[in-house]
Structure formats: structure tokens, C-alpha cells
Image 1 (spheres, rainbow, N blue to C red):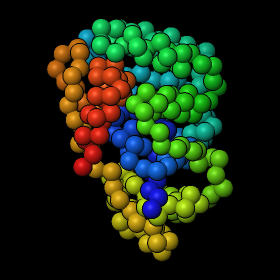
Image 2 (image 1 turned 135 degrees about the horizontal axis):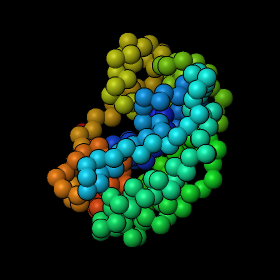
Image 3 (image 1 turned 45 degrees about the vertical axis):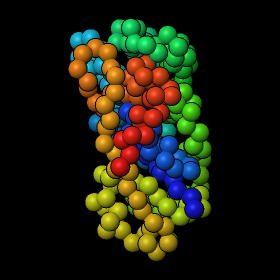
Length: 232
């Protein structure tokens, strides 16, 4: 049995995203679909002493409405890394595990890259390593697949010899109407996840922050255990 999951790469994803990767044998970054500036593909939240703050990677989008995620260029005229590092320092300098992990994260953010996916995917990889999640990850753009929506997801699953596809619950509205997976003999399961609470500085607990919030507050060992508690 081989189970895979497929999701667009996001910036500093929340723990539920990492929990999905932790559940599967192989994870696929869906980087060859249209970029959506209204999504989490270039942004995420952290919890500061003054409330939550959104960290956003600036990108070139004017006149590029139909660009795919793997084509999105960072606006390098803006030093987003410096701004994000200052925000993270302000938010988490007093967190128990900040000193252990922040320098490596900052090195990741300061890595020169022209493309959005060349920042977001390596940062996700860094987070996975800190929590000792060793799921194999690949990019769709490196595979020879075609199709749209459910047909594309099914084609990816077939190429990777998966017999089970783990989907985010939000896709149920169209996957439940699809025959592609049924005809291919691939079962579809859903990643039901309820956000667990955990120790957190900066006031009352706030869910759905980027997973660095969990790492800096709880560390990798307790953090992984907490992360897994949310799986339903």
C-alpha cells in the first residue's frame, strides 16, 4: 500500500499541512498549477506580542495573471528576508526554542532565489527536518503528467504507483463527483484535522499560525507529538 498527498507549496505552512505530509509515503508539491495571490502560497501568519502578523513574500504579478506557481518571480527589489527576520525576532525571541532553531531558519530565508517556489519548498523541507518527518517529497513540475483538477491528481497518483490518495477536505466537493480515481482503482481519503492547543507565548492561544510557532514554543519532540494529535 502506498498513500500520497498533493498540495500547492505554501510559505511557512501551519501544522496541519505538515501533519498531512507526515501521514503519507510520498508528498507532491503541486507547483505547475495557476498561482493564486489570495491563497497561502506566498504568505502566512505569526503571533507577536501585538497580535498576529502576516508575513508575505513580494512577487511580480502585474500582467502575469495566468502564471503557474513554479514561474512566479520574487520582487527582489524588496528585501523581504530582512523584514521577515525582524518580525520573527520580535515575535519569538523569548520563546523556549527560538535560540536553537532561529539561526538556521534565517539562513534559509536569506538564501538568494529568484522564484517563489525556490524559497517556499526549501523552507518546508527545513521544517520537516526539524520535526524529523522524513516523507519523500517531489515536485509535479519534475514529473511527466498532464490534465486538470481530478484528472491531474489521478495521473500523478498513477505515475507514483499510489493506491491511496489523501486529499484536503476542501476538495471533497469535486472529488466525490469524480470517476477518475474510481476507474483507476485508487481510493480517496480525506485529511481531517482538528487544531490542537499548545504552549504559546504572547498571550492567549491562537491557532493556525505558521508551524514555526509550534517549533519555537514547544520544540521538535513535543511539537511532533502535538502536531500528530490533530489527525482525526
